[in-house]
Image (tube, rainbow, N blue to C red; front, top):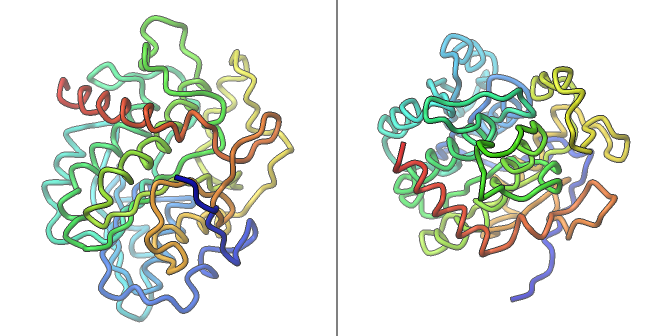
Length: 315
């Protein structure tokens, strides 16, 4: 099947608040992971300002409660609350899922770690894959019935242009056989985010659940890049400080997440990858834009889904 790319009047410099100008989210229930800072915080703030009931999933409940109080709208129906969620800890993910009651209209899978030194979870999983993909996969699949109950839910997976640097390393996902490379690990986890959107979009279409992935762009003043100084000798060629991608502020960086989460312009769109508030075209070598073929390969997407289920079952 062929289709045209989804376009909107918005672009790279549009802010999240501008995307939702005039949109009423009263009665909508939302979860945003990693919303204690950065674009996750701004995503949660703007959705609440539009009237949504927002739950932010955070590792530190005290910090989360403070953030929830800060970003809750001063007036109107929107609210913000914090709940404990550690995506690298499957016990925490299960507890979060089990505590959820009622329908869920919007799930923003925003939390992530980038290019960290080698760390493993208690299951032995490499931390970036475990956090960026497996934790979110377990969360989304665990909340599937709540999403289906919303009769038109949306799931948003925050990926990265870094996905173009590599596919999922199916033969050695956890770097047990090859030397650990923090950028290769990051790339495969971000490719996994896109593949999840492709397969979930296919599997959940009959439940009226839309699932899309996005590249937020290079964002100033976030904690995501805090490990970069520790890995200057990484053997990969990916340079996160390259000048071929323009910087965005946090308000602009959250815009594409908000577009996919709540804009009428993306109603019914599913299984696709966006950047700068528009659907991305194919990646071209030498340009850090677009979506790589390996990240939207339906066979890879189906394989990753089964591998993820198998890993969670064995945990």
